[in-house]
Length: 62
Image (cartoon, rainbow, N blue to C red; front, side, top):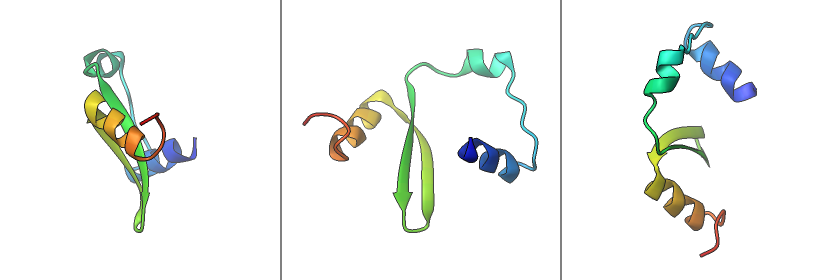
């Protein structure tokens, strides 16, 4: 909830996500969350990249 609230605040306090937005979202996108020195980074990546990062960070068996 906190991340969603911060993202909405960064967009001016109001965001609309329509059914068309949801329907048009490509399959196979994954959200990554990475804490770096300058803050928390959220990125959309493909399945291969998500799996590679998860293995690297210990989220999946090697």
